[in-house]
Length: 66
Image (tube, rainbow, N blue to C red; front, side, top):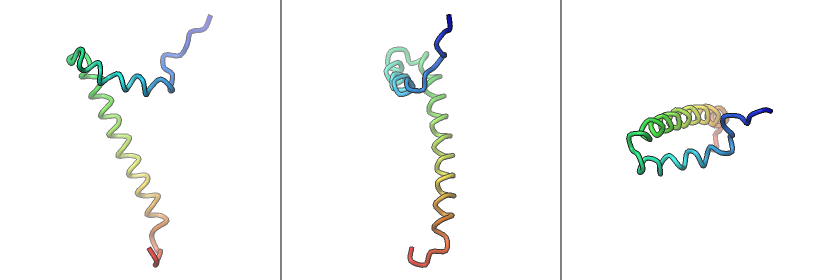
């Protein structure tokens, strides 16, 4: 008998949404996952911003009407 995978990508919104609730229940226990999630989100946001900035500047350079 096979076991289900450890995580399912469609469950992430519910899991991440519950971290805020867990912080009010047990702040010491939830601080680690909250900090990890916040730092991962920050890193992904900065990476996406850099990629999008490079992508947009690629097409916007050289346009005289912009």
